[in-house]
Image 1: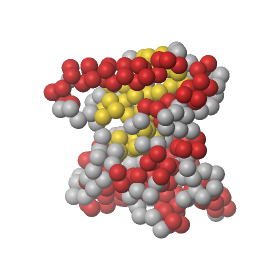
Image 2: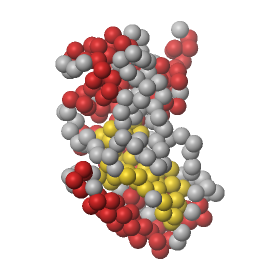
Image 3: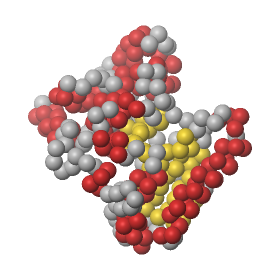
Image 4: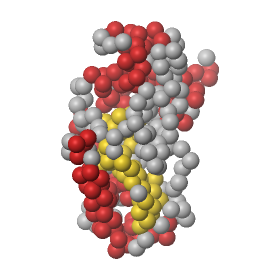
Length: 288
């Protein structure tokens, strides 16, 4: 479904319309969803050909994903888990996490924050998620993210043995996408708290027990979301470009959805500086 935002007075009704449309869909498939679906938003200031997590935007970086991430967390005394990945994602590093929010107005801000000559977009997902950071799947996803690229098949076998699963099962798990929606991701992360954020962990869709090589994830589809095999629906709100400035004014009240509020630690006092660490990592690889 596609909704175009045409007038500033439409904002409140648009938000309600999205909820009403999704509730209608949920009611028709209640037996499948069992009332557990949630609503997630991603705002983008213009149309992009592909929507992928940052690690997939650089082939060289993806090839060295595990070593790169281990290097970043070692400098900050962080553990190899999804919480650390979230910090890297929000503070300048590259990961296989894609930012989403549970707050429509936050997504609306990101759809209007720049590119005033182009329409903005809000993608709305009504789908399942993982809400337990201690689940077996979360531990497998974290292990895979930090996995060294060399001898990947042997490394995957080690994960399989660690979790008492077959290699085929592990490959099947990490080849899919998962919304991660649990409180631990917001621990010591004011930015993520204010953005009411969560992440989509993007899997390696081509990985299997016979093709043990990390490759680029499949871009999110406007029509099918994460893919036809996943439960849920996706809606798209198009924000007319001529409204962006007015919408930014609208979002200042009653809660101030501005860059200063949503990014409270910029430009000074940033908790982590993974962007600088990433640059140094690249420089060291080139020298070697």
